[in-house]
Image (tube, rainbow, N blue to C red; front, side):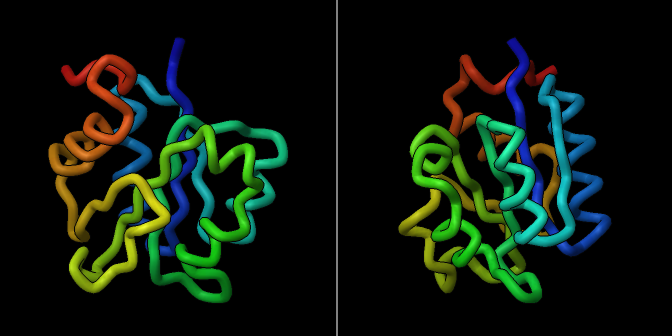
Length: 124
């Protein structure tokens, strides 16, 4: 069974890179360029993993996590992706963090850590 991921980022290059890396590792991926769209997608798409930028216009990553439906939040791993250093980011409500700029290896390393090695798709 393939894992499903939602990637939310207002930076097109980071959005596309994350999508490509996840798809190459067996994920079905939906992308959104803002958090409001990311909330709407949750009405019909139940991801195993959400990668979300922290700093976005209108609704930032912190507010996005607060607005997620509780049942989805309970069953979905959330990883922030940000230029903000992890020491400065508030990570108490999320499962992981990837520093921008990221490499495919650093992204998948954190995805595997958060999901557990046996659940994250193939590495090779």
